[in-house]
Image 1 (cartoon, rainbow, N blue to C red):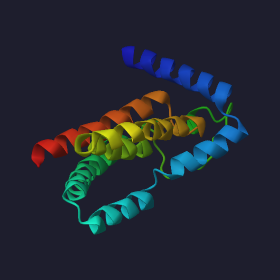
Image 2 (image 1 turned 180 degrees about the vertical axis):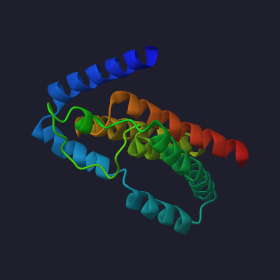
Image 3 (image 1 turned 45 degrees about the vertical axis):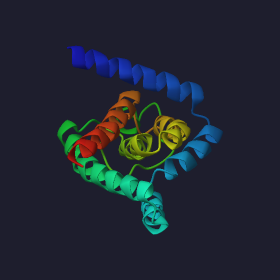
Image 4 (image 1 turned 30 degrees about the vertical axis):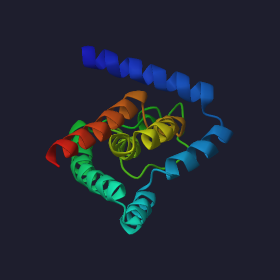
Length: 173
């Protein structure tokens, strides 16, 4: 019962946010913010860190890669175990997403998890950089709601997953 109430509250919050703030202009901005958290961008940053040949950057790269090795299978497992329908599918009669998501289920948000892996690792290795990029990670999560493909709790779960993956990786290294 409590889980159903939480889901209902999350759905209500999503509907409020989406109907109140998801305009075409916001969708265009959200699309590009979301794109910054796609995989190829991370690969380019990893290559740049590797090529910089700086001990601090090398430590960041190792932490980052280890955390992604924890986060990605965890994300896939959770997504396929929970199988939460995306808001754009569940509420298809009342709203339409601005993008076509890359997979079927919504919980947790992979874009948000990836962004929080990146920022949480930065917070550990270079705190000032992490603090500067934290608003970006939060914007990635918000963009997924504004695009109509995630509920707010999907974003919270993604942020917790990404941050937890870094904490686990730190304890292994």
